[in-house]
Length: 399
Ligand SMILES: Cc1ncc(COP(=O)(O)O)c(C=O)c1O
Image 1: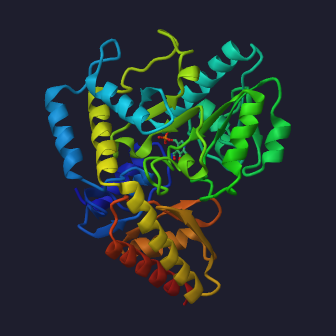
Image 2 (image 1 turned 180 degrees about the vertical axis):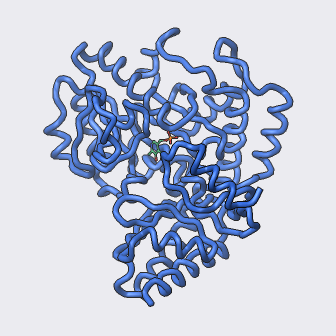
Image 3 (image 1 turned 45 degrees about the vertical axis):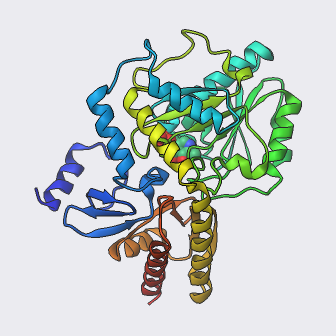
């Protein structure tokens, strides 16, 4: 079928929930993808920070083949060896003692909210149910997680929203201290706001959050769905701050594109989930957790968080050089590891199109921001090529 017909059917048969670019991708290898017309792109979107090992990674493909032949799905009425091994590996390499597997980031956060509320009621008081989250954050699109997402544009038209959510400014410990009261169950926060615009808090922010939560005896929930799995240069972003959360959510890169979510918690919190407390049909199934196990093992064996740190520094430096070379086109470049934002002066839609036409796929975020989240396996040559395209695209827009 030709691309034009395909895009017409897309318009006709799919709910118009997303603004799609006029491109249909059909094949990928490493950091490169190809569209229906055979055009090649450098994929610096990583499927929105998902394909940490790149496209068609041989170990991922091998595990998928093997697991699909052996056993795709059973249910959580049975023990699933791959799920158990992945839970152990996650616990061995994080603060956590126990894991609940689900199918997406939103579902991982839903689980975190439920777990936090149940823990707060059982170990605090029955009044404790409020979740405090940060303005500009992003936690998902289900009703509870979109409510925790403190941005009006995501709420509009979906009211009434669930009760029990409060918002404070990101990176403002005084505002949080004022907002915590006898009804607060926990604080939900991204260590770096991704969708909100690659917003990096001050160094003292996460330690300050930890202290406030300890003093109030409430849970600190870190949403590491975008920042986790090595993207910021450490396996978990909280490691940069020298603190640990009570609950953490992971998804996106955990199975490199096979849908999965995970909610990790300390024993103290996790034990309030007892048989019947929560559930899922697909969550943690043999396929998703087998792939998750391969992805996390590969990430650790190949020391990819470290590589993300190094490649991220290169990318940041070179984008900063573009900013200096082309005055008046870029306001700021910021990021940590391979999560990088470039705040543009020209309309971001034009920048995205100009990059795509030159063979580079990029994301947007926050306020007129270009966001880059390439696979952690990206090479220096690919970094250089991408930066070259961004420079050319900006120069063309300036003309
Ligand atoms: C920080 C964060 N939390 C939660 C989500 C929601 O994840 P999902 O789209 O898998 O439900 C996202 C997605 O972009 C995210 O970036």
